[in-house]
Length: 190
Image (cartoon, rainbow, N blue to C red):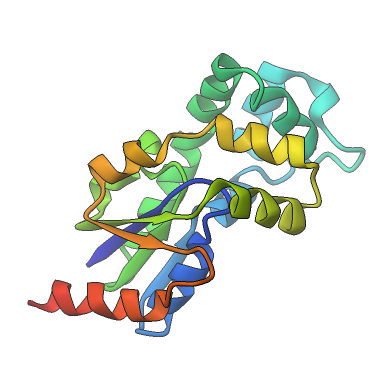
């Protein structure tokens, strides 16, 4: 079984994924896959730089993610162009990884936008209040509150996910997410 875990940045998808991992699921983190496919000299990075320009490369030839993020999270069309370039590479790698394990979780903020939801038998939406999300992003990524807010505003609304997902886990630090994962797994066995 392949389970998708999705939700906006800072909702705590990784924490929920780790709960599934404790139950034997193989976790595919789309962010880590994205970093891998955007390695130096990769075809994906070449396409991104051809489109956006060499000013988004660090001295060592790696992508300056923060600089590119500042650009695309303020411009919906540029974000769509970036996603159009990267999704095909990310999806191909995730499809390969997912078919090598019987119990898999795909942790991806852009699960629906990339088409990865079609690989999943069930999808879990991880939600969290925006103020907590902003604090998490600022702390985790070392970015400004303004940058974190612009990232959230560039993403889909909670209602988008609720309409498309089979389950919702609220990860606000007060709910027992491990218990919620166990409840979902119990439902899947029925």
